[in-house]
Image (cartoon, rainbow, N blue to C red):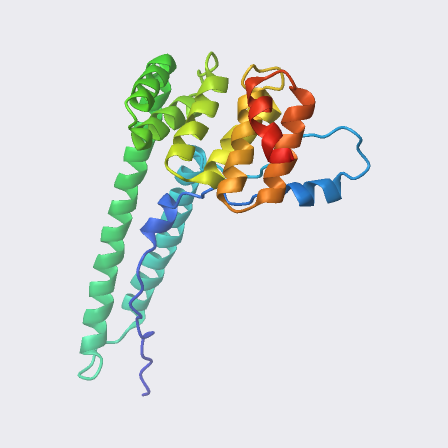
Length: 248
């Protein structure tokens, strides 16, 4: 009788790291592209900066999805193990199946632990006083600890109860990114101020810093567009006086 051999197991790594990948905002729309899309509008408007923000819910769903896929692989391995008929030539294959099954089960345990920790962290963040996060972030910013300031301002902005200082936290996080020379991220935050808080006193500063950030990236024409918008909309601001020389 011809014996059927079980499937040859292949060693594959479970991509745990995928569940924790953070998506950085990198999709900048240049001023020139914005004008091309909105050529029929007479009034200038701030460039729309697109971004993808990682959300705790998204990460949890990713981990759960990975766990579901892992359960299916364990079931497949168990089925292959039962169907395999041990013989002198297939004994090593049986051992490989058993070893692989143990590895998959260990990966499953690791994913469950990661999911539990993430859910606990998410719950803890929602119970923290958001203004405490903002104040700590501001203190770190004043101390020129810009990396820490970014983390604290980000935690503040992600808190569902954060309302009182969203405008300032967004702008200050942009300032921290600017000091860290992470100009694209700075542009994203400054643009949020111009788009979400159109009556803010920070509008001239945000437009000015967007221009400086584009200039630092070597995108001088895009920078000029923001400088011009600043000069047109806020001609009496101190920032407008600073950009007039750049517009000559």
